[in-house]
Length: 235
Image (cartoon, rainbow, N blue to C red; front, top):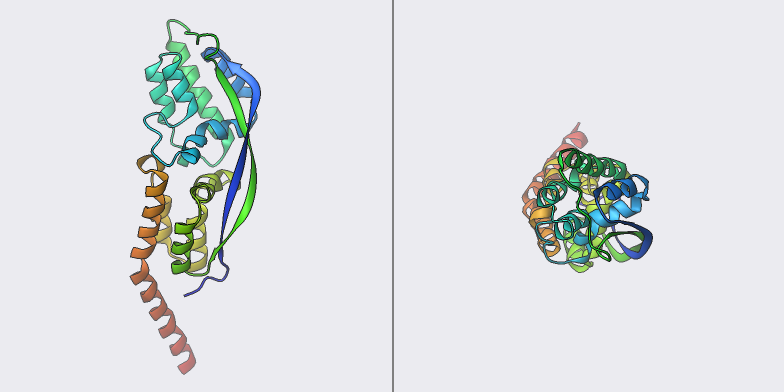
């Protein structure tokens, strides 16, 4: 069974730029968070997943790392690390949630700790260039082969960037599977994968495993579609 349109595997190249903004303590961090470009929010929340092929550890975003390592605020670091990026479809929502968590913590704090000179939080942002790869898929076999061959940055682009890029919850894989084959169960299984539980390699392997395990359902769908066509022709 072929899709009406192919899945085009893309990748992105990111140029990291230092913004010139920095924060030495939590009040400054909130102030800059309110003003900084949204691309900076994306960079500091997501780049650990993009750059590392291994699990990034307990603190999955740069804000949590800095708060723990430089300010020694472990409780706040845990709250920031527990932000589930898959719950958001808009960078402004993430910005708002970061500010809310830090503001609530400050309201209960007895002192405002300051990072040592040279250890402030330096805000960066990334400038992305999207490129098509040479891989495309018309069916699930081609999809699995393509996903195994493309780089992990392509996986990051389609799985992590897609919701925020297009303002929706679905990643590109689930969107294509649902739109092309109507396989809601498989699309939801892929969408439900928790990136915090996998390395990027493991995440790719798990997506391939889910697609390959769904093949009996595909065959049943083909048989059902064929029977429907034959009945129509017999009328």
